[in-house]
Image (cartoon, rainbow, N blue to C red; front, side):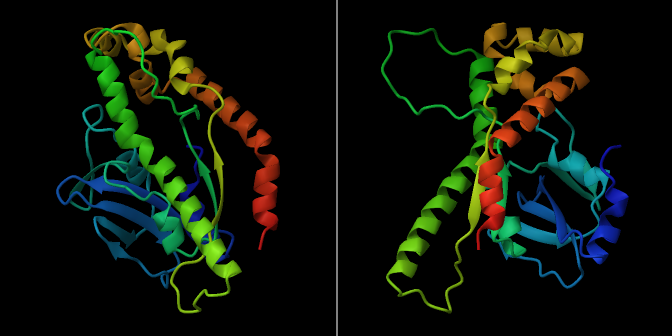
Length: 254
């Protein structure tokens, strides 16, 4: 009720908004379909397992984009059945690039931690809950982080080419400046504080997967409690303020 989707067309027509895009996965074709509401002259794209489709964005598109498999049913749109857009979306920033963006603000939902693969002593066999959490993270969260790493590397290559003055005017690549904002707190840990707000049937099912401490990642995907959501909004605002200077530099860059 807080997203005035009915105004999207008006904002696009008066040039206040260039486009609105939402990605969902077609369960029958396995394609990542990006539904785009934009000016009719906006060119759509077809790539390997990724297509753009011009339409008017509705609540159904949003529900389809966030329908986590196994937990939520598919959403039917124009006779097709869709689920979470992350499933086949190996390049999440691609739609923005396809529509001409040269500056990107990407917001992650996983706290950044130091990469470590130190050997530890013997540990218990991971529970189904632990494995499920890793699987959900890999399917739903890793793509955007890997895409940002690729973008950084491409920018570094293009910057070095430009310095050597051998860049071709015909190249289809161009530098894309980006700011990456990720939460400074572990959302799974925050979710564990609101575990009791889950419906009893969901808590019962989760208990069968393993210890409570190992279900926090799953809980964070399933918790739609207003208090929990308000806590995340507060965290997002705090982290956005911390990134303020980076965002301002992005807008001032040419």
